[in-house]
Length: 572
Ligand SMILES: Cc1ncc(C[n+]2csc(CCOP(=O)(O)OP(=O)(O)O)c2C)c(N)n1
Image (cartoon, rainbow, N blue to C red; front, side, top):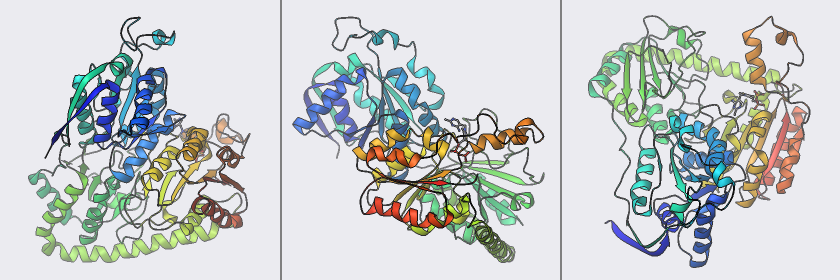
């Protein structure tokens, strides 16, 4: 039964923080400035009066804050709040915001707003920067990437505004929202502030797909000789994990996880046909693209002209992308897990008639499954002793030390064919907009949400630096979050080099041994960075040392409760 709570003699900031705590915001990831003065006062007051507010986490860089909120959501399914300093903090948080937006991750992203009153009102301007940080439209810089934005006008509207922000963020397709908080408004006092708990505003319930369209899709899939499911992000919703596994298994539908952000089906599932589109894509007659903005690359990948293509997910047209011309014969808008379950049931009508075809396909897919894995094993055997160390070997060694519950963060050339995931929500690549620097924060957020579980962050050397490592190690120390960080250190931005050579195979850069702006080989001892936070660091150059080094890192994390960085010099 909803009840009314009344707070007496509070500032808007006090009321706001109390409300956030009531609405399930456990953490407030913050990078502060002068606009924070009323909130810092609220937090200090809460310490003395022992009132409930979200736990503040001091994030020395906004990139850490945003990605911690993302990591925390991916483990718990509950959005958290970030607060940054006016326009400049918003700008620094944009990388994470873009990742959250493209990854459909809800975050309550908030920023102070520089005071606009030059004198008089409480909170008025008191520094030169209060003029130079003012903008005509602070939210203008991010409006394209949030589902909703607003500037708080007064304390009376707090409950409506906070609930609206959270319910919109949490409704599919989920995504971040932005609320700016002017210093004068936060500083206002209220004799009384009353709100209702629990909230009377709720996110939209997960949607089912259109019945007629589902019938059509079921008939197409049941009649297909070579159906194919392609997904990148179905696994963002842990409920989609078993829904996809059951559906694919029952009707012998092979699943390719292409450029995947999450694992959506167990590594050893009989229908997990790997991470490359070829050879299944070119023969596919019916393609079900589930939660995948880019199911293939039109310029390179062959798709049959007569192939029927179905896109499915909360936003099957991916309307946030201006140009996207993949054929779309049917678009099923629905929550992914619900959609897969409905399709599973609807296909049952065709099961009897399609049985022979399904059985035949199951047998041939079993062969392909085995051949694929034989190939992966052979590849690993052939590279395991290579120096510089091969990413396949590093991945295999990580697999050896991890358990089924371990959460692995991917911001590296980790090779998914050499690592096993058997449970949902155990592999995250939070860089949906490819905004590098997501992994360190995401790992910390995941660890904060699951302190009893091992979290392994994997990063390229470039990505590690994008992740503001000292900021991340600082938070790891402040919040006691021992994460095992593994660096795939190829001493370059290989992706940039690959793109340059790809564009012009005969060009000067292709022939160069040291292409400009692609090398990071002036320093390599990143393991020393974690020492500033009393963490354990080690550099590895010998393939035989990868396992022992990872075990030492693991021990530091699990027994000594220290952060750890294992810096592995590897090939590209
Ligand atoms: C914020 C941001 N800046 C630049 C890029 C462009 N970019 C894409 S991959 C890449 C290189 C990453 O280096 P590293 O993590 O070492 O991985 P590698 O490519 O060497 O495997 C860069 C710079 C990006 N994606 N995001």
